[in-house]
Length: 135
Length: 285
Image: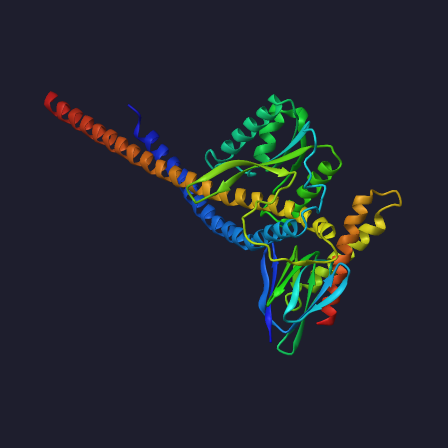
């Protein structure tokens, strides 16, 4: 029995449809959700979402957020989400290179915050590239 | 008696202005629609966010987060003032700025130090001359509002609040009701509170625990609040500009009408005068 999966970002809803199984990157590790899962609120890390619908698997790259599982409905709230297929590989590669370059240019005494920003950007870009390769 | 050439020149110039205002009205109309779409797209996220935050509060009453905790004494207050970058939108920005100035004065009367952060050139220019020593960062809005801009502001303000540099943060912006009405409002952003809508608790299981969830949830909720203010302001700006340009276009129409009338009168007077001159010239012969 499929259940409803909704992925919502500030830019609008990215995915909304019935799915059979979804694997989410929880902050404590990946977890799968099947129908009638217990009610659950869990934070998510930057990672891949695996969406199983009608025998097909779709991958999506998400930035951190959280998931709300409620019986026949799963709502994923994230700041950004790109589903494989709509994913702009060239842009992801560009972001990846830019972040990498930024990191290497930072000296050892660089501001911690700047470093963290670059690292987060690099992680997001890597994540998007992984999705593009898997899909 | 203005001469015919002068009136003609003025009519031509007013008509050119009219072309500009009419074009601006149409551009503002198109942008208003786009801004409204963006606002609508952001709504579900904001609503779900608030609902979840409330839910966490219900499930675990003692869950804490530094952004939720009021400071014991309020000494330093930060105002985040959101306006548009551009003018030509009637009294839109002035209304917001007036409210901002009033709130700031009240705050200062209560003995608080005020720090001013601005988003939008109009706010920066307004306060740069009036309160040069209290200016904090300015965030440019170039082009369309993005979530990234909002979270940048959110991160900075939250960091200051957590570090104890400020004890409260207020957000001043214009709320969009309809194409005709936008109302300025000032809301307290930090310490953050989620409005309780009285809906029932669904008793969620929280993993790994409520405090860890709040740590990701609360900063995002603050960002969303700022994002919403930026979007409201953006929508309102285009609506206000549309209304302003609409009335400007109407005014130029009236002006052209009255100038045309004046022109015709002057032309008729000139013809009459010439006739009289010819007739009296003929009589003299």
